Length: 158
Image (cartoon, rainbow, N blue to C red):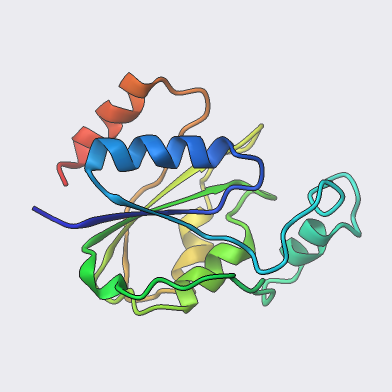
């Protein structure tokens, strides 16, 4: 049986809720990716082109710092990686997370929450930060019931 980590970044709590369910259904360990500098409501205002999140997403080299580190990443075989979709992709703090550890030959299963957009290009932008990881097709988990999430997780057979 593979050892599972569910790592997630949640700006509003929606992704955190989904991550908790995935951890429960996989018997995985939960790790929150917390920014060193928390995001305020103003930082997250996508309508403001000068908000912190807008500026980070425009700059592909942006790597917001993470508050805490995981000491035992080598222990895990599968990483469910959760985040909200920002500007059609994962927030750049997810790249910070991926670049902070060695994910060579680890299976990464992205999952996301989003108000309007999908995840079509997510792996393209994440793969740059962990090129030797095995990225699986991700899941958009908006408004999914516990049963829906469990069925998706069970399909993966981890």
